Length: 300
Figure 1 (cartoon, helix red, strand yellow):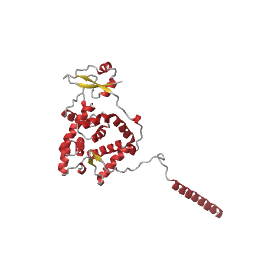
Figure 2 (cartoon, one colour):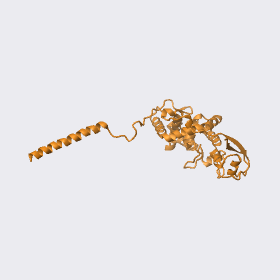
Figure 3 (cartoon, one colour):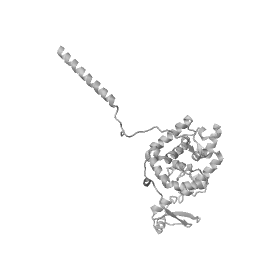
Figure 4 (cartoon, helix red, strand yellow):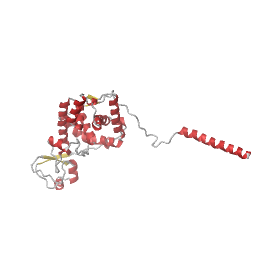
């Protein structure tokens, strides 16, 4: 009996020693990583001197710093989307930039188009469409044709002109490009009411809904990342970037019975012609008013 107890004691000591040694070993090694050894997610440093359209972003204020940090983090670590935006910017900024300059709008507003649509001819849940995301009512108010047959919100050149007109009016109303950008998202009337109710005159002093309160910060973050992509980990070669194939313009002031047949006459096809002219919404152009349209034809 005593021998058995001695053996049990020896056995217990051995087991305890085994667990102790392994506990130390496990503690030294640490938990197993779920990512590659080289994968790291770094906190970002807020760049000094951030501006939008020449107007300072007051990141020395704690709440402003946090809001700016959020948008930089979200847009830096949404890597696939960021790289797509960089590629599309190379394709479409050469169209947008000279138009903004022509109409007297600061170059930074090209990043508003990035924030609105990701530089795609898409629609928002509210029905705002095109690169600049105009609502049907706003587009018609500013002279764009919008119907089932033709929707000029999808004409980048015309939509950029209308966006410039809207932004200039907002700037005249509020005296600030930053507030003009916020009004592009929320509407001039709503921004006016908020400024009056809260008795302030600066976007950064306004308490707004979640979308509009993030809006300018998102634009500034996109400007920072797309202007300095390598600083944020984006690696690419020039040949990786998208390009816009060359086109020539054909003037049309009559109806087109069949877009596919029309395309063939110019040595192209329905798909190619529609890609360059997304404002043509059907396989025909009614044009009862004999309006003059400019249709882009790809040059091969």
